[in-house]
Image (cartoon, rainbow, N blue to C red; front, side):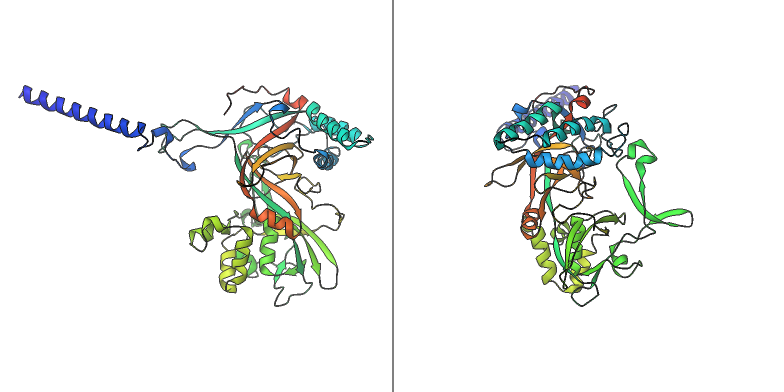
Length: 449
């Protein structure tokens, strides 16, 4: 009996060894991927943790080829905001980087010092444009420390990736936005049937960071019923007359939908007058990209999805079907009149500064302060040169979530809209911190990714 049991055990071990050897052979031959090389989904990994690496300007591809003149002009518009603020206050009250004892925003005073030096530079006279460009470049090099941003995500203990190494990402998604120009009417017509609504008086926005530090950068919106805050009406309810309000103007329903995505725009009326409108508030419901819904419903393949293709489908579709698709995005944006903004300037970003085409960027305020210079290195497509330039973080948006995530402002009008609608690319981000702020941060040196 013992001999029989021993024989079976030896046969089992020999079989297991043969299976292991066969699996190893398949892995090394490339037939099967090793465990660490398998594909896992984002749900298998935890929240992103910022990795910050100080670098030199010589390590930034394209730094010496970029003309930083317009970036300086954009920065000066942010400085106009900084200079009106209390030097002792936090530069980013919404900051929630999860870095213990580290602030990438610092105080307003940290930003006012380079602003003062930048103002002196703008009034200096240079007869040679190349010398001026060099002086501006030296200004940023002297007053700011470049920091390369990457993200580390540890595998979740109960996920398929639990034995995989951490996921390291040094690039992220960059999209584009613009200031659209749309025809409008002061009265409702068959063509202009959608009301452009101002912010309702009963809309209440709550900064959750005021209640818990872990919720900094998170906001909700609703309305008061009795002594409770309840959700505000969603898009479907609002568009079916769920709230009262005198419209600012009347638009084509599709124009209104895309105006809400962009957050600002210019309206032109039949009598030749024009009106600028900007973001006035949001109903608190999560933003849903209807392009993703179209892919899920097999209306359109993913590779064909763009702002232009979505709009064309809405225009061609039965009006009831188009409305049904728009209602998949429960988020609804309200607007303000922007009569105080000069026509030659860009729309106001979230910081309150006018945006500069090609030099303004929308970012996630949980990580970065508005007014921060950022170097972007974006691969637009295989046949185009990378977009490498200095921009200023001056705006934010509901879909802009994550430490390596940006929305690039292309400008105003049809051509800018074409560029913005086609932009969905990956790229890297290098943030520029004021030197006095960077000196207070103990960066952990890391190996190159």
